Amino acid sequence: MATVQAECASNEARLLVGAAARTAGEEARQRASEAEDERKRTAAVQEQAKRDTQAAQEQAKKLQEAANEEKKKATAAQEAANASKKAAEEQVKAANFAKKEAERKLKEGIQPVVTPTPAEVSAAKRKVQYREDLFHFAVAGVAGGGKSSLINAFRGLRDKDAGSAATGVTQTTLAMARYASPNAEYPYVWYDIPGAGTLKIPDWQYFNAQGLYVFDCIIVLFDNRFTMTDIAILTNCKRFKIPTYIVRSKADQHIRNIMKDMGYDSDDDENGDQRKKVYQAARQQFIQQMRQIVKENLENYNMPDQRVYIVSNESMFGVVKERQPRQVIDEIELLNDLIGEAQNRKAEEAANASKKAAEEKVREANVAREEAEGKLAQGIQPLVTPTPDEVSHNKQLAQYREDLFHIAVAGTAGGGKSSLINAFRGLRNNDIGAAATGVIETTTAIARCPDPNPDYSYVWYDVPGAGTLKIPDWQYFNSQGLYIYDCIIVLFNDRFTATEIAVLTNCRRFKIPTYIVRSKADSHIRDLMKDEGYNSDDGGGDKKKKLYQAASQKFIQQTRQSVKDNLENAKMPDQRVYIVSNETMLSVVKEERPRKVIDEIELLSDLIWAAQARRLGCSEALVATTVKKMLQSIRANSGI
Image (cartoon, rainbow, N blue to C red; front, side, top):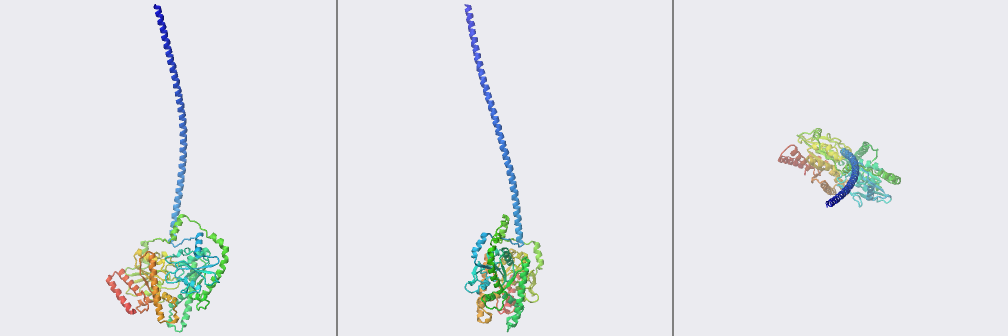
């Protein structure tokens, strides 16, 4: 029994050991399986980590390469930016230099050379109705030179005839006018070009503004002086190879003025013998002066010598009408040369067409220079204020004294400044001590002329004429030191020009009183009488008085309206214009009996008023009393 129990226990123990062994084996296998799985997971993780590391390295490499590329691009961009900045700075530097250079040239009176484009040439030809089978004459020059009247003479017309070019005291030619020759045998067309030097037509812009480069021949006409306008036209004609003819018009008027200066008086010459002798001497003097002044002016500008044709419109009219004018100078030769030019010129044009086309090509300038020259071409002038040293220097030159009243007489060349000063001082042009006068510009430096009357503490200054070769228009005010004077008389003769506007504008800046004066009234009224049919050979009488009254009224109205319009166009306040003749002013000053007074007495009294009130510091009542006494004395002696 015990044995059985022990065996049972042994079997049970064996079973338990076997179960335990199986259990342990199962657990061991399970742990081994788990360990294998863990190993596999670890290996997979390690493999993934390895792949991730490689991917990260590759990404980092790509990012580094991209960064290097961007850095390279940034470096290149910076270098390009630096180069662009440097180029821009160079352009700005060049532009500033070009601007300063243009302004320097402007201040020195050097005008730009402007070449028209092919489109501008075509437009100009359409404007003038250019035809290849016709010969196109342009008559150009300063305002008041008598262009319209000369064209009328060339066409065999008087100024009042139907179809004639308009003439007048004011600037009547405001747009280019085309006039065909009335003679069908001559295929000529004449062009009446608006006068240079007016407000609408600045002098140095004249050639291109009027499209003169399209004409076959240009007559450069001048009246009172050979000016910068004439030189500019001749220079441009030389550039474009356009034939030019320098013509001095109104010869009869200027010879007559020289005769008067020689002392000739028609009232003292009953049989006319004295007139013939004086006329020959005056004629010879005038011709010599004209030829010499043109020769010298051309030499000064390095231009070849060129003939000047001296004519009068009346004699030219007689030549064209195949009459026998008594006083011919160069009229016949001028007409023959113009006809010869027309016949020869057309044959040359076909051969020169291609050459001209090449010469007319435009060369583009840089932006800064175009801007600077564009402003210059628009007439924008620099505003220059004198320094204290310049003011002091000009006062020393003028011998300025605080106890005197300093009156400057200024304006365009040929306006009659010297003659008017002589009249104010009670002198004739040929008297001892008189200011120099003449056909050419005799005043080349400011002349100081004290008043010979010790009761009047006035000093008159004869200022060189603006618009001459030596005195550019827009530099006139500052170059002559006009800012130091107590009063300025702005004198004009044929036209109210840009010079007068410049002087008036600067006088407003410096608060200097101004008096606008229209001189040579007697000459202009006489010309109007001739236009109405008056002939001195017909004698005097009622007809002469009526014609004089009508011409005088017309001249006064036209002159006042012209000045009013010009001041309005320049946006300046209205101002009175004093209309005078030097002969009448002389009589008023000498307390004689002038027959034909316009504004001479009023001008003289207003000047005395200004002197008393401004320089001498008198009270208004005392000034009024002084002027009133002076007027009473003048009017009593003049019979007015």
